[in-house]
Amino acid sequence: MKSIPSTAGIALATLLLSATALPVFAGAADYEFQPVKTELPTGPESEFAVKIIDKRSGKPVPDAVIFSTRLDMAPDGMEMMRSTLDPLPSSEPGVYRFKLNLNMAGGWRFLIAAKIQGEEETAKGEIILKATE
Image 1 (cartoon, rainbow, N blue to C red):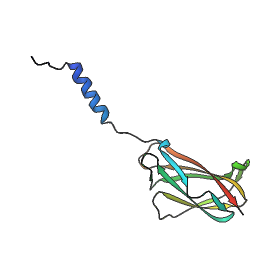
Image 2: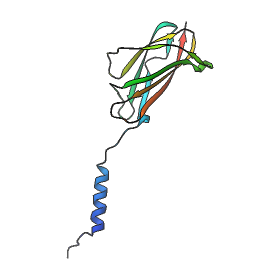
Image 3: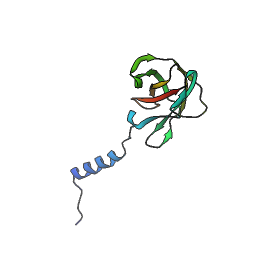
Image 4: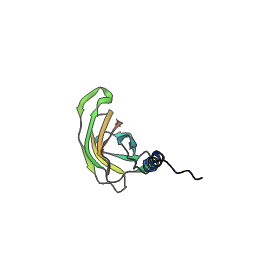
């Protein structure tokens, strides 16, 4: 005699199969901001580049929308000492370039916030730079 599956058994099997088909969403913690270099010369024309990396794949993230940046001397205890920065074009996908005005030698903090295409959360990063004369 054959066993006929119960309604509860069919419901459980359906639930388990559909659970494996749910999409997996990334979050802001799945992205990392990596500096190309952290030691830069002082002056109004210092160039800085940061890569946004998807930690799950290790690949660069192109077409992110950078909407907030800040440059200050918080590492040296002078958070109120801010400086200007301007975006520059980049020819490498996932690399975002900036012109910094590092008007004083010492430690600088670069804060960045970006919207990653297809993500609801904002990805944020903090990079410590050293300006040398």
